[in-house]
Length: 202
Image (cartoon, rainbow, N blue to C red; front, side, top):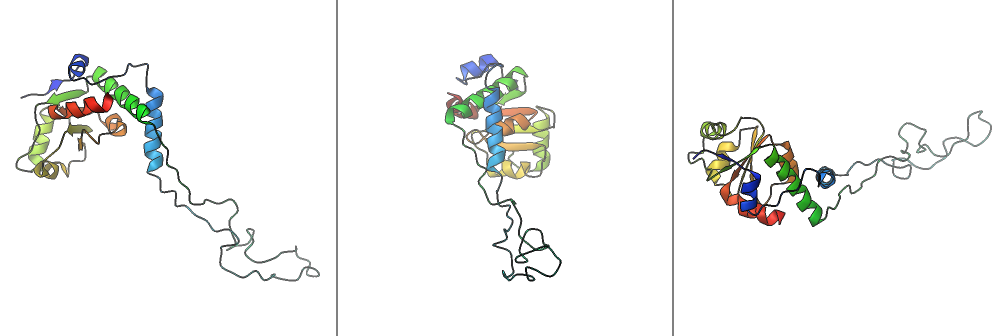
């Protein structure tokens, strides 16, 4: 059965809430910023003068040498000394409220529906687990370029078939996020995923 274009009327029938084009842009920005910030490890670290290797013996006497007065060799102006105001381990993570997450998902889904970039399928499965079969099944429905396939779940053979296809991604309806939807040029939604998407946008 060929894929059908997912329209606003179909979304309403499936109880999927969509945001208007003038709402939710800030929510999308905040959520994508949080996704990217939360992936940062924040492990960059530099040593201060109290942490670098070396003793605190005065490098030469205070007076009589003609040189500037100095203390120990761990001072920041020396090679091998400490770093002033260098990076320290920190937490970059950002928290986004549940309502903002829902609004962002509604906005992105609404944009995709308005662009006619979402199609629905009755089912999607690759029984033989072959990449060639997966490519044929997807390209029969949409152009092979940044395709996101959303279903309630996938069997092992389908995951195996899609594993080496760089332009396609399998994701469950429970875990699909705004960033993945924004990255996709085409979205194939299996009908069993509509109920989960309805709950997530409610």
